[in-house]
Length: 555
Image (tube, rainbow, N blue to C red):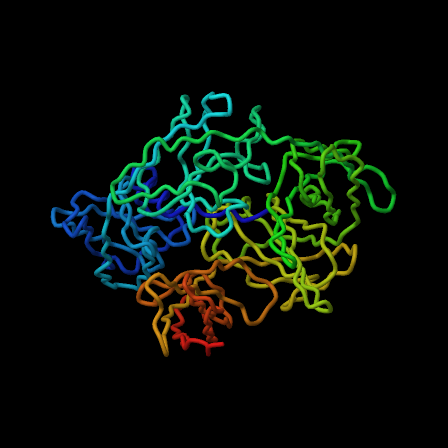
């Protein structure tokens, strides 16, 4: 199980400002300490005021019940959002046919607000987006219906692999016609199709899979015709004729017990296509499939084009089984006889105990929570990916299929309740500050994970020496608990344009704040600054992190 990624900020703001997310605090939100905190600025188009534009403000790490704040620009283009609690937010204007002119602020600006602060000057310059229209047909001239259109930067280095989409949500209609609007000025390649790994959302809908096809009708991205979009311009007749469907082959195999050879049922099969980058590097494209071993341990995958692949077994949640990936090649015929062997892994079982605050939402959160165990092998000096399992209604859990090593436990809720963190982990009544030792195939019981609301925070400022961050650069802040082997997830945050950042919902303890500077034009390792800080309950720990931007010596 993986923590679900949050929605895109702009999409979330569009929904919220359209009335689907009413401005109201959740039942669990603490009373506002700073009703006078405000955020204000101006929205312009070609230097002139843009009246009637909604500007939305949303938490940079939104939880399920977080409110969204908004205001509408007046005749002078000014907006003022009031009654904003302290926190870290993303702010952006919502104007579907327009885009923010600054590339580095295309998704909005990050702003950190402290109690009773009046943040001014968060201005936005909008430009009218461009339009791209066209029609998608197959080789016989028939329209391709409900096909997603992918727009990628023309400067993308490797167009052979999956294309990074800069726009989403546009697809063809019943005539095979599409219309993309609000496109940022720039140079793009337009494409449709399944891609190399065949796991595009359209797979399994009863139609042939096609390789990624770029405008006008090429499968090699380097030969695609570039579409140039200017401010408010329209590129019409960007028609695409899909390449012939790729011939695919079937792959058959079995999942068996590694010791007895007996079939193992109900094991999900993951598939990755191995792409060779150069002589020393490869990457895997793919993920989960709908294939699953039956009562005879057998599974089948279909329509795989030629290439090198890896299969990974995923036993059911709470299963004690584990298995290693196997690799194989698809050449010019079906592949049969693959065997995935499973072995007995270690497991951890126990109970999650809720301490302190016991309001209804906190109790309900345990029904949408999971416990993850990450294994660290000290002897090999490596960290292995772990497994996770849901917390049952009675608070119990079991995480299985683990390798030997030191198990580091984490706790997270699906609705991302802020401040709900692990305070300590016990095994048979003994606190385990540095993780739990696990042997091969050992079944560890008697674990109790104590979870409570944590209300400590870190309020920081990035101080720069010997240089400046480029206009399109950003500060990314990570947090590492100095003591203790158990933790709840603390996602990285970004500092705002002033270098301010805020991390909330922390348990008391010692942390290392790690600030990393990123800039697209840098061809060197990102500069890093670190600082230790002590967090106490109910208080904000102030910290200044100094980072040296001195360029490295030349070759």
